[in-house]
Image 1 (cartoon, rainbow, N blue to C red):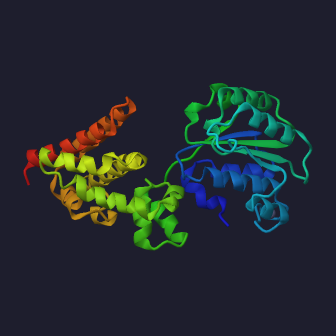
Image 2: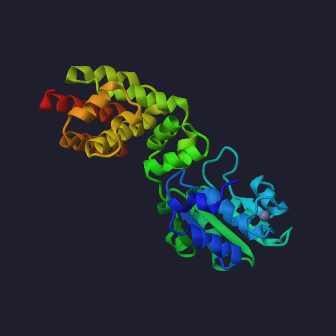
Image 3: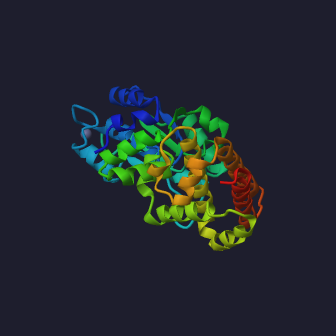
Length: 327
Ligand SMILES: [Zn+2]
């Protein structure tokens, strides 16, 4: 079982949360905000277990309530999710959930309501929840969990204690992954790929790793504008992967820049020789130029420019950098 200590690197408030839930001095509503895979759900689960635990050292992980929370089968712990087939959480779903926490607890120790993708609540749903947060039922604790706190109404946020979660450094994340049983090289690659978000690192599939390797070769083989089109064409039609392609290119550029700036050696990232050579031979200035090109491409996508054009702009920049520094 995971413990609060496993998440100390991801939020400054882990110790305080543990203490508050163990003593019963917790507030009634929390907003856990931070990127995907930074431990928000796991910590919420630990808080709930601690509140309901009957063991000495809370959470013990072995008493009845702890095991029921871990198994997702505690009758007083409610998860609020979108209805099947829907993306948003509507007002009806919130009403129903509030009615459920309104009835008295099945077991001693209070109730919990968790909303794992809180940003999915419609404005009406949020307003409905707001009324409950303003006059919370006795003994119920609410956890709103999101990677997009900006999608929540300010009035909702003001009713919650906000706890921010952060990614770990690549080294810390790799160490955590090793502790969870991954091999050293695999852990290192995943930690980099996920930008230090341990949960994301665990979810990465082989396909994503292969994509990153393939792109590190394709992108850094473009030594003249004439080579751009072939690479764009190889990636432009797979709509589902376009976001992954952009994330992967951004990650590769970030790693190259880090290596140029004296951070982790590029060999550890497991890229194609073309990307490794770029990191070793190109000046820092060039890495920075690529980073700006990626940011511009992201902005282009944000203003509905086609993926092919945005990707092309990055590749043109790469070819320009090769020409400029002529190695
Ligand atoms: Zn327990």
